[in-house]
Image (cartoon, rainbow, N blue to C red; front, side, top):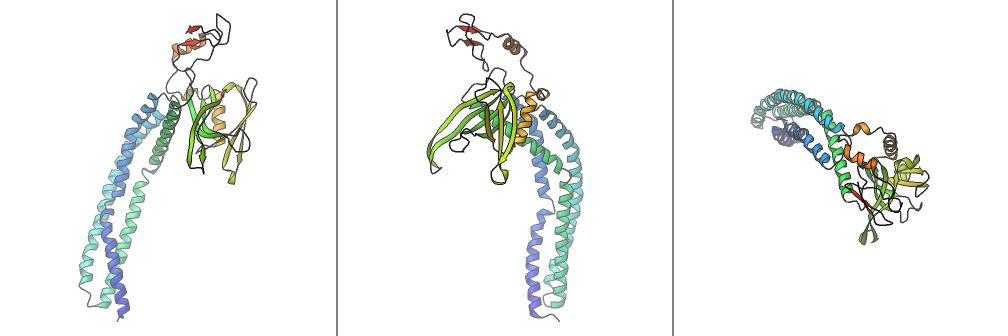
Length: 351
């Protein structure tokens, strides 16, 4: 015969397991999978429009985005059919297992005056509920494995689009003008290591375009205790034509090498012979160096989703560099500019 302690323990176990069993009523229908599938379907369907949005904002690179969206759509159509088919099969099996356990609850209630049989019935109930929970986990893993890779790729693509949106926002807020037909390829938060001591080194945004490397200070300076007061500082610190970059070196400093630093060696005519910058965020200094090298070698040309304006390119090639009145050097054209004014004599020259 079972003692009262074992019987009381079985009653407590039964109450806890019954609560768990009740909570499984929604899980047997694999609602978490349904939610993920619905969310993924929405993301895949929205991608073409989201990509179109950044194209309208004149981000011309990463032409592979359109192709990825097309491939996602094709793959998702097939994956979704398999997911839905497996969902029907797995859900039907799990619901049946759940329903088959239900009579055990009433049976246990009728055995309270028979401790030994009560304890055996509770143990059997616990075993069945535990097995059902394990079957739900296994079914969820089997079905989610059908779309996990696609979901990861779609999420990565959306992260790329968020990065591009941020770059476009920073470009639109810039304190300087970009050159005519100049397009941003990459941007990151960065710190110009101007003093070499860390103190008063400006923080801002580093831009890599198809024509220049640019650093703009963009931060709040003069805050007390690092929190209160201060004023916004935003100005162009330097810009380097890509052809003036003669050397690139990476260095990792700080705790566990957490500071990603790039050292630039610049050619004649540059404002500084050397410049050092710490790039911040998810991208590393090695990644930035690789992209700068690709851009300077012309390896990014095939990534353009929007071809340059042929008429504008012709006009730029034919634009004068010296004033025909005083002979002074004319300023470089900026985006949308159709005329130049000589800084020396004021002559207006239209292109």
